[in-house]
Every structure is written in C-alpha cells, then in structure tokens.
Length: 396
Ligand SMILES: Cc1ncc(COP(=O)(O)O)c(C=O)c1O
Image (cartoon, rainbow, N blue to C red):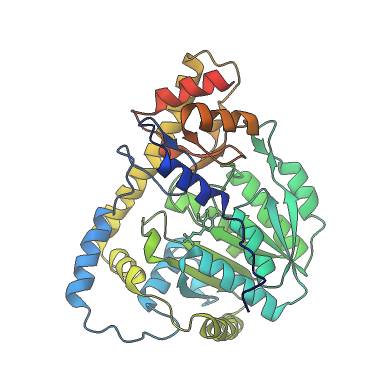
C-alpha cells in the first residue's frame, strides 16, 4: 500500500522553525512563527486561563463524553461575544454554534457543510489568504477562486477591484472574509468599507463565510466583531469559523467554533443537524478541556475582565511594536517607506522584500522568514529590534 508513496514537501513555516532551531547564532530571530510572543520571546499562558483551569480541575468530576455539541456554555458564550448579547439574530434564535477542534476544525467543518448542502458552490478567497485556506476547501471537494485583495506595491487594500469582482458573485458562491487582522497581509477594510462589503453581500445574495482568528487583536472585541455583526444584520445566512487559539492563547488546546445563521430558528436548527452528522463522521466528539476553561472565563465577571485586559495588553504590544519599528527604520536612514506597518494590524504584515533579500536576511543575519517576507510583528522585542533594523538596512 505504501510502496509508491513519496514524501509530501513540508509546510515552509515548519522548515523555517527547524532551520531557526538548528542555527547556533545567538542573535537569530524567527519572524515566521504564527504565535504571539511577549517581550521575553515567550508565549505564556494567560493569567485568566491559569485561574479558570484550576477551577475546572477542582470541579470536573468525569471525563465521560459530552456529546457532539461539547461544552454548551462555551458555545453560547462565544456566540454572544461575537454576535453581541443584544443582537437581533440571537433574540430571533437564528444562530447555532458548535465547538470545533480549533479554528482550522471550524473551517473544515464549514467546508464540509457547504459541500454537503451546495456541492457545486464556489468558494472565493482573498488574494492572498491564510495558506491553509488554499488546502482546506479543495480537500472538502469544493471549487475555489480568488478575488483581488492586497496591493503589494502600495501595501494597501484593493478595495475597488475587490468590490468589482464580488459584484459578479451570486447565490451559488460563498465568499470567505477575514473578520479582522488579515493573515498574511495585515490589511483590513475600515468600518465604512465593511458597510459597503456587507451591503454588496446582501444585494448579490452570495453566502458570506467569515474566518475570525484574531478577535480583539485589531482594535478591540466590539470593534473587531463589527464585520460579523454587519453581515448578520444585513444577510439572510452566514457561516462563521472562529478560533480562540490566539486571543485566549490556548493554541494547543484546540478551541474553535462553527456558527451558522439561518433565515429563521427552524432552518438554523436543521443546518445544525447536518453539522452534527458531519462531525460525527469525522471526529465524533470534540475535545472539551480548552472550551471548559473559556466557558468558565466568560461566565465569571472578574475573569472576563482579566481576559479583556490581557487581550488589550497583547494588542497594545503589537501596535506599539509596529510604531517602534517604523520609527527605528526611519531613524536608521532607510529610504524605503515602511509607514504602512503602522496602518496595518494584527500579528502579520508583508515587508515587501524580494526572495533575494529574504535569503540574505537568513544567510547573513540568521533572521528567518518565509519567502513572501510575511513577518510576525510580535516576534520583535527590545533586544532584537535594532539588530533587525540594521540587517534590513544592509539587505536593502
Ligand atoms: C486566518 C486564520 N484562520 C484560522 C486559523 C486557525 O487557527 P487554529 O489554530 O485555531 O486552528 C489561523 C491560525 O493561524 C489563521 O491565521
């Protein structure tokens, strides 16, 4: 059975992690990694998570199965957090949410759902998008296409081109959006642009699917939920894949959720039965340790406050680093304009370097990033930022 099997090329990010780990240079920097880093270069457990985990440990009495929906308190709390407690679609009972193994699990369940209910649908993804999107939707047997999104020359959103492309879409199409903090380019529509995007979705009748992996990392929880809330207000249906990996820093616990909004309560409930049958065939029951922790946090006022302050801390650190980087690049006399870094948000941005320059950063300075020069801004800190800027000046 396996005689004819050749090795699949590794994910480029994994190659970078391995090369960085093997590099003896004490000044080495890994700018490719996809996790938040603090000033010490660590990805710590949040205080609110530590406290909730203790409560979970002392109150949990069994590890028996919880059934396909997993932790119901998590499902309802995350739905209220994203859609808003007072949202009309929640009072009309039009949303159903089920926890999934991470945001990736939510995207795959969502893709399987689309395939099950509209097998001929085409999923439209932004150019560029998170690398795994390119794999997940075809793996579910769906057709995919791309729509214009990022202007590499200007490091900005191709808003008009995107709108022109989406104006051609209709009921057989699903359009995938990043709710905030676009990965990889860091460019998001502003609130007025989201208004126009969501108006267009309602007018053209395509189904919005929103990937929300960085809630709270752009401007704040309420602000970052705007895109989803506008789609919910204007469109009859939507699919949402959310992740708690980054904003609760529970990466390895695999916490995510798939939410579907239907035209009414009964239709949403019907879709939930399809989701439950798809997950049953896939992993049967979801893991519940991470969702149990978040259920506790979101149902305890003090822990919720603590969590909000910890998310604010992560967001402010990233935004502060964006500002510092732009200032230091300017002070170093680098002519190329990097001010776009400050206008972008979330952990990722493209530096706009050639493959040659990326290679020089790696070979001459032990600074590791993928060939597209996408960098994780949270990888910078007081002790490596000057070294990076010096290296950047040399390769430019
Ligand atoms: C845009 C985007 N969507 C989804 C995910 C999936 O996150 P998770 O680790 O929860 O599967 C990520 C993670 O990097 C991401 O960047």
